[in-house]
Image 1 (cartoon, rainbow, N blue to C red):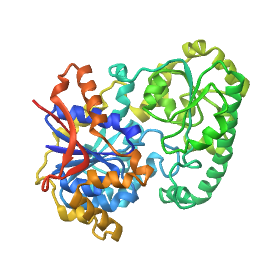
Image 2: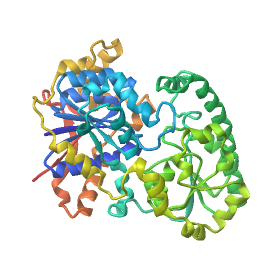
Image 3: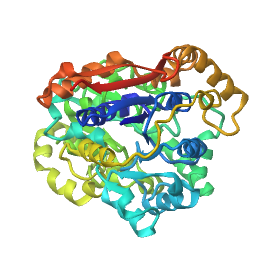
Length: 462
């Protein structure tokens, strides 16, 4: 069996994808890690039986329909399935209604859920058959569980980690003005609400920067690591905070690594509060900066954090961080608020997903089509998509991806290299007391032409 895993943003999603690939390879599956931007040209050349995609949204529906018509078994393992809104476009009922109304329900073989709240919403709506809905948890959080936690990288410890979450008003990707607003409206949010939310968020962002500046000045002896969201520009943080010798602005590496080695995590409405609880690090929510609109947009981070009501209270918590951490009931918070959205913190999410995939019965030939690659796997491709597909067919996507990434930072950030995957794959195997040398990660090649592809092939030599 050959299964493809679409990887959205490597910095966030690659470790979990490698963990899942390891569990599949252990079960005899050949796994292909497919960069999201290359799936339209790589998937038709990999000879896949099944494909696990990173989301089911309107933007990729036509592509998914083309894959389904070609006979691929399609599954969804959403990259953002945990921190959900109470209402609006990404609330559980709205997400279930989208899958049912968009036509996704007709083409998906299965859906993997981070937690029971979304799983139950799909069940209640009758979106898909119950046997197609799988409550597994998300593999990228397996690293936060005690079983795998020692795989996280070590680094200097004891800093205050300031996590940011403002890509909507501080995007690192240049696009047409208002593009973020349009995307939210397309996802099901009311336009008037989006306008109010963005206006509030701009002011909250400015206040957040000011408070971190105050903190750095008030506690010059505390090292502060500011970590922008992966989709944020770092320029505004450097402009606002680089004058402080005790502040480092660095968005590189895994957020789990950074949290594990922090004294505490400071944030505002950031989903990494969940990872903080999973890793036993105190999340401090700057609640006094919130507006009713920003507070209500995603309530889970606040519920799992210690609320901070003023700047003085922030200083007090930081000055007594060991005491505050000991007093925080991590187990209660997980049971009361996290488990319903993120399932169990047992390090077995990848195993549960792998078990479902390997039990599937495949009754068609592996998918291979050079014509689909030329057309970008679309019925009505644009001229640009045809040019990209033709170039990729002639040169291999490993070459065309590298060329395009030289001119586009977004594409550069989303490339996957065997030199990054192989060490992590072997570390996972060694930690699991398997033979690391039996697991290999290499550049995948076209099943028909042999040309090198952007995707990465992971296999286990039995």
